[in-house]
Image (cartoon, rainbow, N blue to C red; front, side):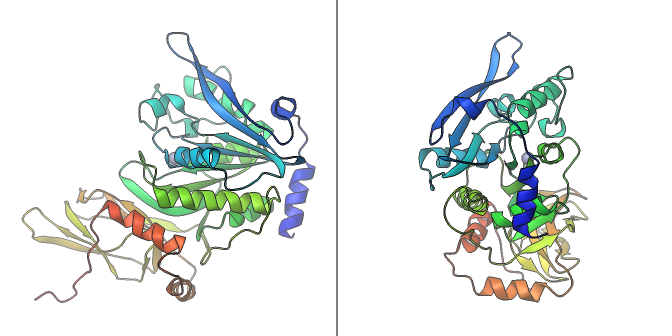
Length: 368
Ligand SMILES: [Zn+2]
């Protein structure tokens, strides 16, 4: 099936009248407060939702951030979109929620006050735990009314990720949407049980996630990357004018693995997120606190650095670098594409920006 017909087949099955269908008029931008939960004191927990409508009908797309309350790169991205919209919405509806997990966000925490992970609680139930009820409330008020979703995440605490999109690539319309976002790295998979993207996709709101950068930060390159991706997706759906920008290269894979420290020590990194590595390349030198070498951690296979730890002190078994593996023989094609990039391309600037979270040194194969 072509990408266009996959999208049309998906849309033809969608029949619903969202609550904002009559509330927000064509061509308008409105802000709502959604009642999402209740505090111990009995006061309501509300979250802002921005609904923008084009003059013409079209798909309904949600952009969500901080489902994990400490992952605020997406919150910064949505703030930029709202304060300085880089496009004019012509068709369809955009629903933007800058903070889904407000109770985690207020405590700078991934989790809800009941210590549950909201992103393992979807679609939720009205009679379940706090997390399950909140998930259900959000899912009912937002997700069920949307045709597509973009959920913005970062790496977990103490780690960083090169921007990558994750989606269930077995679904043709979702695959086309994920590709349109325009990240170089696309990780195939349905997502963990209870995650928003998995439950949303199952309910007909085809959802991708972006995993980019670190917790507790709004990183300039990451926000720019996210805005470019969102713009690309809206272009693909013809909600705004223009053609999606293609990535420098495209690696679609379901194969990735953490390389771990064998012994405890203090790392000197030789790679940064987004770097290409060959089998046996040194990725970090692990020394004890006297400077005595514990081990040189090397790449087990050809791959690309999807993510890594930002903390140089490691215990045995601690994850150091998350590598994603391209198909046999495709690394040279990727290397050629990256070689052609200008230093001021977004790909290169993102690589540069993300590498500032730690010291990266050249490895000396034959020290004196
Ligand atoms: Zn997350």
